[in-house]
Each structure stands twice: as C-alpha cells, then as structure tokens.
Image 1 (cartoon, rainbow, N blue to C red):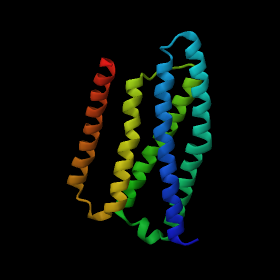
Image 2 (cartoon, rainbow, N blue to C red):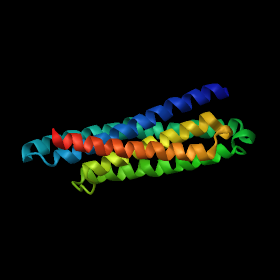
Image 3 (cartoon, rainbow, N blue to C red):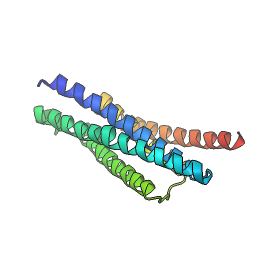
Image 4 (spheres, rainbow, N blue to C red):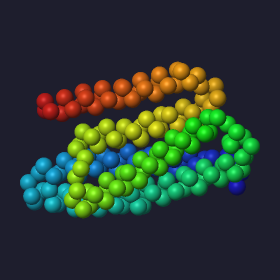
Amino acid sequence: MDINTVKALHIIFVVSWFAGLFYIVRLFIYHTEAQERDEVAKEILSNQYQIMEKKLWWIITTPAMILTIVFGTWMILLNPDYYLHAGWMHIKLTFVALLLVYHFVCQKIMNNLKKGIFTWKSNGLRMWNEVATLALVAIVFLVVMKDSLNWIKGTIGFFAVAIGLMIGIKIYKRFRTKS
C-alpha cells in the first residue's frame, strides 16, 4: 500500500476516533443528568445510555483508536527517516499519548457509570469533553504547520482556544440555569 493510501486511512480513523470521543462524553453528561430524574425515568434512561455507551465505545471509538495507531505507525515505518527526525512529530506523538490516556480515562468513566458510580458532575464532564477538542486543535496545527509553526504564537493560540472554550462553557452554564 502506498503512503497516500495509508495516510488517507489514518485520517479517516482519526476522524472516527475523535467523533467517538466527543460523543461518548456527551452521553456521559446525559447519563449523569438522568440521575436527577424520578426513579422510573432514571432507570429507563440509565439503561438506554449504558447500551448506547457500550456500542459506541466497542463498535466505533476503540476500533477507530486502534486503527488510527496502526495506520499512523505504518506511515512512520514507510518513511522513518523523515518522521522520526521531525521535531513536530515528537510533539504530535506526545499529544497522541495524552489522547490515549484520555481515551482510557473515558473508558473508566463508562465502567463506573455502568456500576452506578457517578463521580463526575455534568459541568465537569463538559470541561473534560473540551480536552479532546484541545488535543485535536494541537495535533491538526502541528501536522499542518509542521516546523514552520512559530511556537510562541502556537502556544498563545493553544491557550486562547482553551480559554475560549472555558468561557463558552461558563456562558452555556449561565444560559442553561436561566431557562
């Protein structure tokens, strides 16, 4: 398989992985908020969210993560002199490692919710959901800009996005509590 085919498959599975990560935390939020409902609704909703979380996690998110790693590794193996000596790639791989930690923390949250252990509040989960957004922004900018990225501007931009997301969450929280 040529490098462009491997790269295309890598991108497809990255998109699928992120879609799963974004949606799973959204399900966690709904699942957590369902605990505030009356007993009948709480049981029905909790059962439904557990089914949805399990299918999303094991049919889409985790296979996409595995295939992202497989095709990413394959790309590196096809051109190790370039990828293993590129500074931007080392930083990207650091973000990917952090994203893997994020993935398995989400799996732990899912397992806890299945057991009826709700240690996260919905607002905390909303902020947790933005961690994947920040990883996506960082990885895309690193890959597109590569070594031409001005690290001072990149760092400022990264934190600006993070602050913007936090402000957006706060505004949403205020708007939500008023309605």
